[in-house]
Amino acid sequence: MSSIKMCERKVVLYYGLAYIVCMQIITTNSRTSTLWKLNSEEGKIICVTSLRDRQSKATFSDALESLYKDDENDAPLHFRSVQELVQNSFPNEDEDSTFHIITSTASSFRDNTWIRKSSGKHLLNVATSTSFGKRLKSETEVPGAESDELDCGKPVNFTYYDDLIGIAQRYNHPDVPEPEVAYLFLKKKGYKSFKNFNIDALERRLRKAKSEKPRSVQLYNQIGNFWRIKGNARLSIECFRRALAIAPSNAEVLLNLARVLFNLQYLDDAIHLTRRSLEVQPRDRSAWQQYFTLGEIFKAYGHFQEAVNHLRQALELYPQYEPIKKAIADVEHISTSSLHIFTIIIIVFLVMCVLYVILSSSDGNSNSQELDLKTARHFNRAMAMRSLKGFTQRSLKNRK
Image (cartoon, rainbow, N blue to C red; front, top):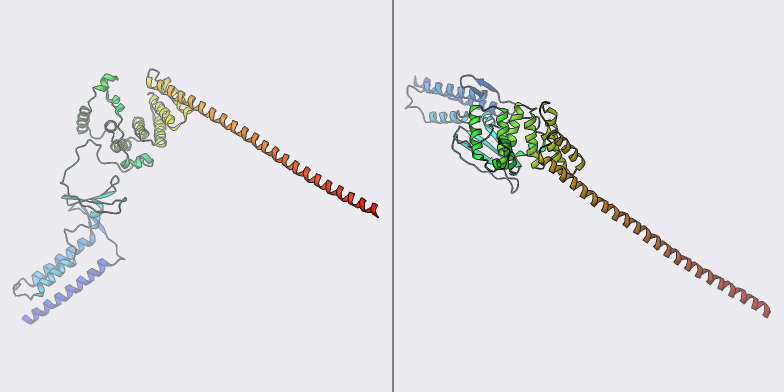
């Protein structure tokens, strides 16, 4: 009876080893692909191969346990070796699958890093440095420790304006504060109100509005303007992007985003966004801000005539706004002074050309005179030689 039982054990062990070898060949074959399925019980997508391996491992382990349940204490030593081989041959259930690694990894374009969440316990941060070669670093963080800064939630994946250079490079922008944006939040537009402006009180109001109504284009626009005052261009652009993802044709958001890029000296992007804001501006609202912004951008570009045209259109729509008049005066003064400078340069250039022509002609005359003198000298010498030759010939004839 014992010999029969030992034969059965050997057969089971041989079949088990053969099965393990076959499974290793199948799972390591490069011609096979990884399959994924939705597990309704766990509520997530899992790997079909790893699930099949776990089921096979459990089945084979149950078969071994049932085979040795009567005399497990008297089992040969290779029983535990076979169990360890089974555990090592099949993937561990706690091991992260490829799909979990891919879906739990996020990129940070600002620091050129990859951040991966692992089991909700820590963050693995692998950073690459392009200035001094590549380096790796690991950082552990407290789970659930989120930033307390006022933001607009997770950045959106796509907007219709992401192809602009200033938006694509938003993670590399320097801090450029815009304190004049505080006028947008003041009820009374005056220097006294601006001087008494409290940025902390504004932040508290925005936090309260965010908790009451988190998804709002107007709220995202206000938070973006808040970060414009602070000077954080990246967060302001992210808030405007989130607002444009909901309302791509919002003229106010487009104009505010254009102002951010204008202050960062992305003039072409600012012109594009401002003109787009002018196109979608409602007819019942004045578009003086768009014309004023275009005038300032073309002034920075050096196109003074176009700048004056846009500023005058803004002045017609909003004649009581003093900064428009000041901007027109500055542009006209710059254009006039530049015109005088160009006139002086042209006159100096023409004078230099005339002097060059005169000097070149005088050099030509002197050269021609020298040539004439040389020719005359040569002619006189030839004539003298001829005369001497004739006189010699005549004297010889007379002697004869």
